Image (cartoon, rainbow, N blue to C red; front, side, top):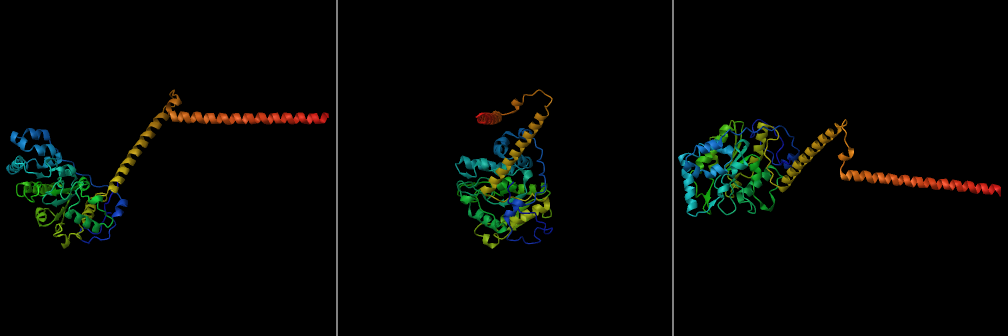
Length: 385
């Protein structure tokens, strides 16, 4: 599969022991040796239907969005948190906003898109955001990400610059795009600490209850993903959210926020994207690093690889079919039935061509024989004369 993962790095037991080289070659990921990456932990066993049946009518009504749109792996670990009085009050507040005609971002169906793109048992990296974007066609449930045709916001552009410093071959997606779903699908949990916002009103839903839930998400990942996860905490608020994470098990990378107001104070050269991959390789082995590439070319290569796998599978199936045919030697099989119309036509054409050649040879033989007879007759006439 096409990757922009870094090569396995084993230069020291601590990812911070040596500063990553700034001239790392991103294209080296395409030839990185593939090991056996750690198998994701099995998702928690959870009887969703039974859990829903045990809710009160009010709870089922208030939690309809969570029941319908939250990935089951996350619902399993958050089921006790979303039935608390505090969370239900948050849901009542959101209903009041909607009933009052307030425009809220992201759209309701996207609030938990982070859970669907990055199921609990696939999390390898957590990037902590803050407030969702509050303008149209921006927020869609993944921190820092925007859907096309919306161009990448300034903070995301600065993230691209930091990536470019880590991997000089990195290229931002064309058309100034800012869709980060490929990262989420590869195990990067893009989580805002507040999951909704009123249109054009930054932080309007702050301190309404989301922070309690997202803090629980951070804590649960740290507690249950015991083999280790990378946390990227940019800015003071994000640093506070990650302050209780056990750094003997996990890697916590802190820096200033990528906002233009602070990025120049160290974010561009923080090296977090490379450090994350170094640590993941040290923890889980080659093949476990994150592919940070967002280019269409990478997706094309991945598609070609998948197509090649399908073709190889077809070849394997064909070989099995051939072996089955060969195994029927003792059966009365009409060989013509094993040939396609094209193959039969080819054989017929070849046969016709061979017959034509033979006819030419016979004709040439007759001509030569006639010439011999004529020559003998001529010689006889000369002798008699």
